[in-house]
Image 1 (tube, rainbow, N blue to C red):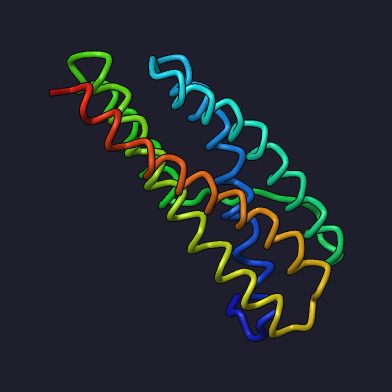
Image 2 (image 1 turned 90 degrees about the vertical axis):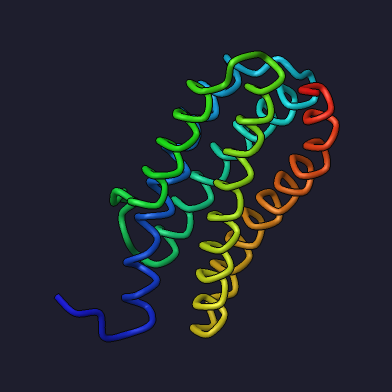
Length: 161
């Protein structure tokens, strides 16, 4: 069935992002189990809690749009998780494992940042102020996490030398 309105487009994209948030919780738990850098571990632990809140915020968005929360498999998310798992398997030591985990997390964060920016633009165009606010909360967390990981990367990379 073709999408014919911006609201239908928004409702079509939400299940992909909702799926991604829920899948990223599980992926981050695996990464946390393999991380050794204390700053990375703390960042992942914090972001797991944020990611759970992101899913709850998306459930509120669905409700505000009169829809039932649902997931639709997101091929981008699936690919990012597979890429992260592969990078962890290839890491030959703990410092490289940490760099690989941080890199995989940054890729996921940037996907989420792009997804949320698109959803926010749609919500704004539709005049959905409350929906936009919830999505902006998620975006702020994603941007903060990306900055933290990107800031920590040089120190983690130095440990590999």
